[in-house]
Length: 201
Image (cartoon, rainbow, N blue to C red):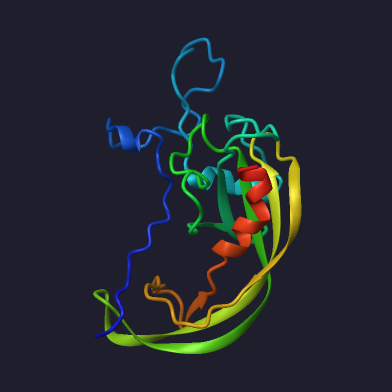
């Protein structure tokens, strides 16, 4: 039986998503902090709003990062300046921002892939949206990692991590625009080791 393809959803999660309310997404800057016309209105951010931090931007509405005990949630992106994509990794509960709002996300981790190596070809993946089984090329890779304070854009830490997988992934995300389906090794464990003393000291 072929492997199952999961639908990729790269959209920001509203802070109100877990608490019900309107399904419409309010504008990211619909009510700025201190706005006299709406002093108590919350400001909601999407995950994509934080992408700009990887390119030198800041999120003034983000929660301030203060080094010390406690949990300091982060959001992770991979790419190359100026284009990055949101990454959902397997990290301990509470480390990744599930509700991207002004009172949640403190840190942004930006992964720039600097090298890669094709390790194997994984055959037999299936998709409801694709008529024929397809193959996936699995790559090991090395990334430069920079950790920023979302609120100020200040660099908190930087370094390098590498990852390689020995087995084909159970789930992959099919990119219709790509002639060759590529998958990179899961870097969750390596990133967890790198950010631990900043996210959960």
